[in-house]
Each structure stands twice: as C-alpha cells, then as structure tokens.
Image (cartoon, rainbow, N blue to C red):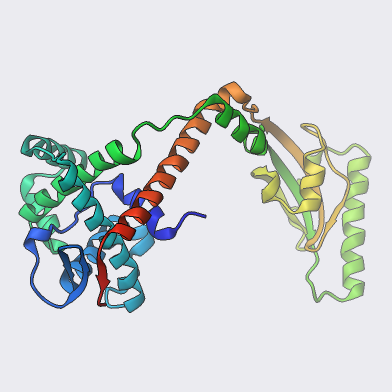
Length: 321
C-alpha cells in the first residue's frame, strides 16, 4: 500500500495549489530545518490552511492546532523543501512569462477578474504576490516531476498483458437488472401467528400469478393492502446492490419473467424482471490503454517514493515540533 504522505504529495504535484513562498516567511518558532532551509510554525500553519482550501473534501475538518495534523503536514513540507533544493541544483527554473500564462489561465478557468481573485486570496489569508510566487514554485515542481520522476518510464507489452491476466475480473462485462416487486415484510419481532398470516398472503398472490394474472394487475390489486409493499419499478440494480437471494434469482430470469416467492431475512418477495442490460466485456485490446495509464501511474508513484527516501537520507533534517 502506498504511503499516505507520498500519495498525497503526488496528488498535490498535479495541481496548482496556493503554497506560501519561503521568501515571505515571518521569523517565529522554528519547527524544522532541512539542510539550510528553515520551516517556521507560521509557515506550517499557513500550509495547512492552503491544503484545507485546495482539498476541502479531505481536510476541511482538520484542526490547524492539532499536533498530529501538524506533524503530518510538516512531513509534506519537508518533501517540498527537498524538491525545491533539487530544482535549484539542476537549474531548471520557470520564466515570468510562463507564470503569467498560468495565472491568466486560472483566472479564465474560474471566471474571475483580477480584483475578484485578489479578494478570494485575501479571504484565505494570501496576497496576490504570494500566490504568483507560489505559482512559480508549483510550475517548477511540475517540471521537476516531468524531468526527474516521469522521464524515461517505459511500460512494456509484457507488463500490460501480465496485469490484464491478473486483473481479468476488472475487465469483465457487468450486467444490471430493472425490477418490479411485490413485497410482504416480516418484522423481526413478529409473532408466529402473524408471520403465518403474511406467508399465506404471499402464497395467495403467487397463486394468482400462476393462474396467469398479469403481474401489473396483481400488483395493483394488492397495492392498497397495508401488509403489502408493491413497487411497479424499483429501478436498475447491479448484483452487488441486491440481497443475495434476490440477486441470485433476478440474474437468472429472462426479461419479462416473474419469480417464485423469494424468502429473505426481511420478508417475502416476488419480483418481475422489467429489463436487463449487459455491458460489453473489455478484451485485452480494449483494456490496453487503460492498463498502460494504471501502470504508468504506479511506476511514477514508486519513483517519487524512492527519490524522496534517498533525498531524505542525504539531507540534514532536524524536526523541532
């Protein structure tokens, strides 16, 4: 399983995030030193606020003063510093023209004017100059990722075939059924005589269907019975969406067929298959491009993981949080 910090860091590399540049640090309590670079508590808390902004679905509820959260995000910042150091070493910077292009692209994508964007940044504790400098750093990191991590990755046909053979179930065609149902529920604490009464009821309904009465007619006949839940169309279901006894029956029936009584822990069911939809299975040729993307991503993650481990070994890292 991929390390959560590395997986989060890799995802962050693929986004334009509002990181705070090192040049605008306020000198306060030092929480870490990475080679010659200092990370302060204000840097760290600002980074947490930025990440909460960029990933609200994951980090909205994170407490900025929670020590465990701060330790987690400090590891993220240490990785960022290591990559910044490498960028300086290889001398592959980003021009102001590229930053301007990216900045205006972001404005256009979000349908915002410069003033609106400045207000947005201010509401989240950032200035435009901080954001532009941070954007430049992000572009550099993306360039680093392309040059150092993704460069020269080759996915062979043998690797793709091996993955396909090992994960064939993922590429099998699925199927769905659309069903109607006549249901007589059996509450868990129902007395035995009442249970028998409901069992006799579902058997009478089944007998009418055996005599040739149309399912819709019988369903309408019992729709006002307080002991019956009649549903003319429950919608589409995959096998995993249904209780096993119902799924086992539904996926054996043909379109338009009506089942016998199906007993589950919830009660007694009679279903009609209104429609069946089968998805085409993906053969190797259809799945090849998808598998190549999966393997490319896995190899990229592996390389980033290895690079960060090696960089940490070589670096002088002191944590004081």
